[in-house]
Structures are given as structure tokens and as C-alpha cells.
Length: 216
Image (tube, rainbow, N blue to C red):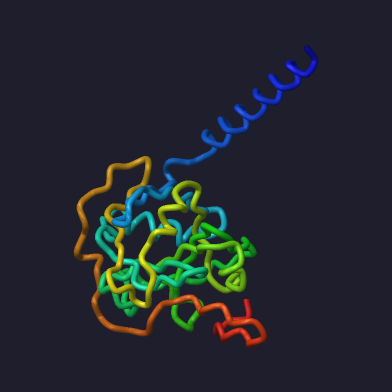
């Protein structure tokens, strides 16, 4: 009888925790991303640690900027990068670049970070999703964290690999959960070439870490 009571109490605690977690998700800062590789990915933005970057992602999402954009740089065990309308890694939106909002949030599987050039204050529209707990660990404090995947990482795992992939996958639709995504705003697209935005690849064992252009 006591065992049954304990099991029942444990079940209630688990259900309560799951309910609290679901209620804690803020629909104003939650994204749903449909992928051409299949499935949907849920991303919880982190405006508490990167308010300007989170707002930029939301602004571009409302404009439909990300719909149809490919994953142009996908490295197995490291990350999948997207957000360049030209698909080259050389461009972004016509919004100004953002000042870095580095934090000590630890990069791990499903962490979403902003890609940038060598200048720490050059993130614009490109972002990446980390595949593993260790692949992006060296980026902590060097690249602005904007969010965390909470559902659908198995769908991210299926994104075609390559730099660029031979047949790249794309974002079919990116939406803010609390809103209905509007049509894509072509005025948000800038096709002028520039320096590629990309997180530095993790060095092989025994190799020095690549320069990041910042000591923050």
C-alpha cells in the first residue's frame, strides 16, 4: 500500500513539473521552424541574456525573412548554419549589425547562436544550431547565444551536411508561436557580398584554438 502511495505521489510530481515547464514557455519568445528535411523544431528564445538579438530574430521572422532560406554550412558534430538570403554565408538582412551580447550560457546540443564575422559586433541575421554537447563548447562567451531548441532536435540532425551541402535543406517556415507569420518582406533582404559570417570550427585535439577576434 505504501509503495502505491509513493508511486502515485511521484507520478503527480512528474506531471506537475511537466505542466509547469509547459506553462513557463513564453509564446512571444518561442519559435516554430518547419524544415524541408521533415518535421518541426521548437526554439525558446532567451531575451533575458540577449535582448537585442532575440528582438532581431523576431523582427525578421515577422517579415518572413527566413522562409525559404537554406542551411548553407552544416558540419556533422558541430553545427547547422542558416540565415543568409543569398545562401553563400556572405550576406544578411538590411538591418544594421548588432553589438555583441556575449554570456556564459554554455553551448550544448540544441543551443542556438548568432554567426558573425571577425568583428564581435557584426552579427546580423545568420544563426546556427549546435548538434552536440561538446561540438560548440569552445564558443561559449565568444558568440551570442539567442535560444535553445526544446523540441525537434532529431529533425535538426537530419539536415543535409556540407559546406555547402550538395542538396541543401531549407527553412520552409519560421513563425513566432504567439503570432501568424506574415508574407516575406523582400525589403529586408540585402544581397551585397561581404565577409562570411560563421563560428570558427572546433580545433582537432592538440591544435590551438582559432582566433576569434575578441577576449570577451
